Length: 79
Image (cartoon, rainbow, N blue to C red; front, side, top):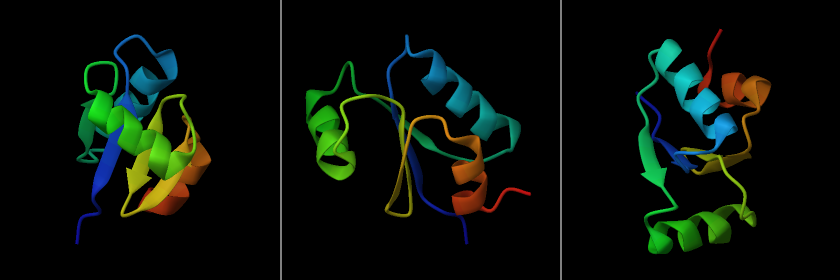
């Protein structure tokens, strides 16, 4: 079963762009939320992660702050 993956990001954040590119390269489906345009989702991200910085990646409720490739691989199960 596919994991539910959400990426909280902004269009100008280089690490956000790299994180989304990495997921796309591995054919991982994800929902992208632009927190610069959606204050409600931005508050949701801060509440979940305790962070104001992006990207914040949520995988089935697990929170990864920043573009941590090793952690993403581990949580999603990318070989």
